[in-house]
Every structure is written in structure tokens, then in C-alpha cells.
Length: 242
Image 1 (cartoon, rainbow, N blue to C red):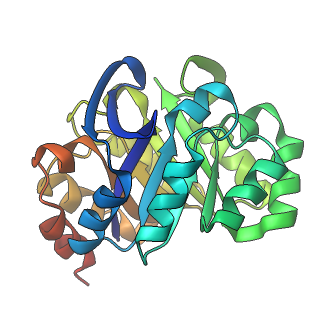
Image 2 (cartoon, rainbow, N blue to C red; image 1 turned 60 degrees about the horizontal axis):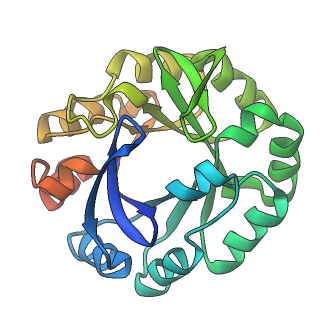
């Protein structure tokens, strides 16, 4: 199982939000490439980059910072936030992004998702962002009526192979991951599931590691690695055992 550091970008800075609220923002660095190099140096084998401004605007915004991160590191990068057209996805893949993470467009425009899968294949990952079990959209500003599991089943049938599941209520709150929600999706689909939201401790990594046999293949951590609550190198060691 991978432990994947998150680098959330707003106005060219590395920030963390609480529950996706842009008004509850903490700035951790004004040097995204240096932060990326730090996590790579501690053993990370993948980075999760989010263009927070792009998620609100509906198009990539922090392109210079994204390009700088990709240029700085040797490990693959996935990118979410504002990828709502094939042209934007292509532009980010051309920058060197390995996986494009679709959220709003996957729910609101299934034809765009299908076209992206047809064109880009396994480079497409879908973000299943849930608030009280329902899928959130538009940078988490709005919540749909669609259950997260139903959405996961729907996109699996379209050809999606990997999702990032975020429990918004736990994101940035250091409250632990939503293990029941992860288990429900992993047990009822054949998707590779990456957990995001609330991962705060080595015990959380151990608990997620127990779900690896049913398809939980990664854990994204943001605030906890920035505050030091989760020592990244040790978390990676635990996740890599076996």
C-alpha cells in the first residue's frame, strides 16, 4: 500500500484546508517544488497534487506551480482540481502529470468521463468526494443526491479502475479515516481505492493496511504530515510491509 503525500495549491502556495473550506486555510510553504522534494526524500513513491483554485474556477489555475513540482521530482504525480475538459486533461498530461483526477466532470458530465477514458485510459482516476455518504461537487461547495457507492459502481461500469475516496467531514481535521465507507466501496466493487481525509497516525496506516486485500491500495495524507503527527517515512515503512 502506498502512502501518498498531498500538495494542495492555492495562489502558488502549499496550503491545507479544513473540510474543504477555503476560508479555513493554513499556508505551509510558498515553495511547492521544495515541498515535493522533501516528501520524495522521505520515501514517497507518488504525490497527490490538487489545484484548489482550479476546482473553484473549473479550469487549471496553478499551472506554473504544478509544472515546477513535476520538474523537481522523479516520482509520478496525480493531479486533481478543475479538470473538466479533454483539452485541460491533455494539457496537464503533456506537462508530465501521470494521472488526471476527475471529480465534478465525472458526475455532471458522464459523456466527458467516457470520452476521457476512451482517449486517456488508465491515466484517468475519479475522485469520489463524499459528504455524509453523498457525492460532493464543484470544489466541494455543493452536494449531490447520489450515494458514493452508487457513483463508484456507475463509474466502474464505465471503465474506471482507480478512485480516490475522500470523506470531506474528516479532511484536514485529523480525525481518522472513514473505514466503514472505504470497506463498503472496496467490498462491493473491483476498484482500486485510495483513501483521503482524516489520515492522522501510524495506527490509521495500520488499519488501512488491513483493507489492502480487498482493494484499498493507498492512503493520502496532508495535514498530518505537515504538522508532524504522521511521520511519513515510518508510515511508508508500515504500509510497504508484506
